[in-house]
Amino acid sequence: MDLKAAVIGAGIISDQHFEAMQRTEGYTPCAVVDINKDKAEQAAKRYGVRAYTDYREMMETEQPNVAAIALPHFLHKETALYAAERGCHLMLEKPMALTTTECDEIIAAAHRGNIRILVGHTQHYMAENLAAKAILNSGELGELVMINDTRHIHYYKDSRPQWFLEKAKSGGGILANLGAHSIDKIQWLTDSYVRRVRASVSHHGKRGDVEGSGIIWLELDNGIPATIVQSGYPGASRNETELIFTGGMLKLNTGQDLWISRGGAYEPVEVNAIATPFELQYRELRDAIREARDPECSGDYGRSVIAAIEQVYRSAETGTEQELI
Image (cartoon, rainbow, N blue to C red; front, side, top):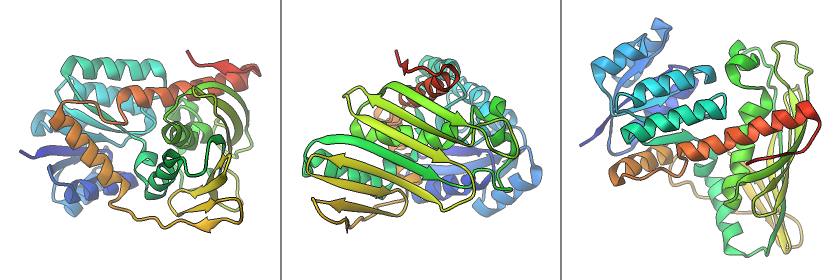
């Protein structure tokens, strides 16, 4: 039997959720929710579902099996708790919540109701990343020595909603929002968790109270060191992860391409996408529900990323290295 699925939040990302649901066996989209009635109705018309302005009304009326929560970060906890307490499995956009305490509340509610949570860390499902992980795991380039991740993007562009730039609503600036992707990518590629961090952040944005740039040094459980460098000011865009091995290097431009060096110049790696990252996420959640198991990007995993981000900010505030318990 198909899973009835609703999307809570009709922003830009909602289109990717609905399109993935429509292309993935086992789902029947039923509803969309947004406090902006026009946005909800427009999305409902595009995807042939019913529109609501209150997620509580939608949950009681539609009784979906799966809810995709695509809301501002500060609304994740209350919405996830409401859905989980009504037996609804969760496709929860990243970051999972504002704090590890909020993550713990969501995880506890899911355990009480035997609910599956998939946190939307799309790095696990992107074709270039999957190809890089396969090469890493093959041992072809020898032992992994370090990882350097760099991200430059105009974070303060006028089109970015204001709530992203208010720490109380977003949880932080570029290091919380895009840094979550980098931390997740590094953890997933190495099958290891962040153990220790040291960070420096800077605030040069023209609006909001969040940082617009920062540098993170981290060490993983397996001893591998990594750096994350991010800036959100005008300039050339860059999204590059370089993996350095004893026998070569990988250069990963996530969402674009993958390059390999076997001791000389970089050469392109052929990458074949089997489906979109969102489709792969929905397949994983569907299978986890059917098999009564946790998805790969479980609530516990999503919490690990938030735990690392908390220590990044604590390190920046205190000027000291922080360890994750």
